[in-house]
Amino acid sequence: LAEEKPKVVFVLGGPGSGKGTQCANIVEHFHYTHLSAGDLLRAEIKSGSENGTMIQNMIKEGKIVPSEVTIKLLQKAMLESGNDKFLIDGFPRNEENRAAFEAVTKIEPEFVLFFNCPEEEMERRLLSRNQGREDDNIETIRKRFKVFLESSLPVIEYYRAKGKVQEIDAAKPVGEVFEAVKVVFTPKAE
Ligand code: UP5
Ligand code: MG
Image 1: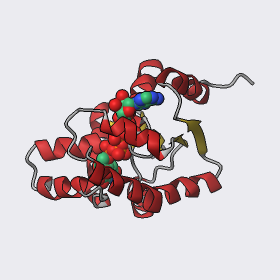
Image 2: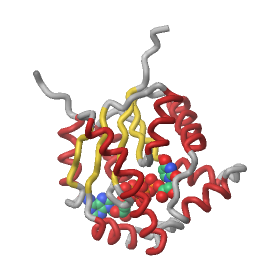
Image 3: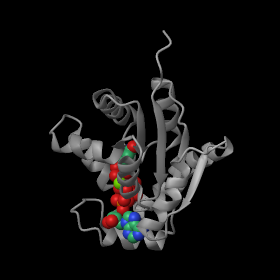
């Protein structure tokens, strides 16, 4: 009855803001499991699942995959991890994602880590990433930026109004960004 709910931190920020890079650092220092919604969707494409083609087409267009698909993948990964502390990276990306996750899981995030980075810097990073991602081309990158501004920033503003956003200047070098991230995750002495 009184089962403990898992602890969730949403890690949000524009395409190329450094969400994945910093989550890897957080996992090393604090005991979280990192779940990148984008990585889970890309794994779903590779696995040849029936949704694979739909997901692939949406990612190529920078569009947001239906909530039910992403939430199922997140729930499965949470169960399989055996952990009770999660960094959910790149989700929720719109108001519908946010409301559906809350309705289905009854989980409210502890806080939202927001990597704020200028578009020129994010574009530079994505164009030089060279990891063969099908969405790292200038046409798709522009679409991803537009969707971020129109659909994802409002989710960040929703949590900001609730006092739940921890904003990080993500334009700095990786090590400096992580110094700021560490402060957020380090328990304060009372
Ligand atoms: N880099 C990182 N930090 C740096 C720094 N401080 N200084 C200099 N360079 C830095 O970093 C990107 C690149 O920059 C790397 O080369 C890194 O070395 C360098 P990374 O840590 O990968 O940034 P990240 O924010 O994770 O960028 P990513 O491209 O993964 O962000 P997106 O939000 O665009 O991608 P995601 O995988 O989350 O989503 C992809 C697509 O999947 C979406 O567009 C959407 O179509 C779909 N999707 C959904 O539909 N629903 C979801 O819930 C999630 C995804
Ligand atoms: Mg990422």
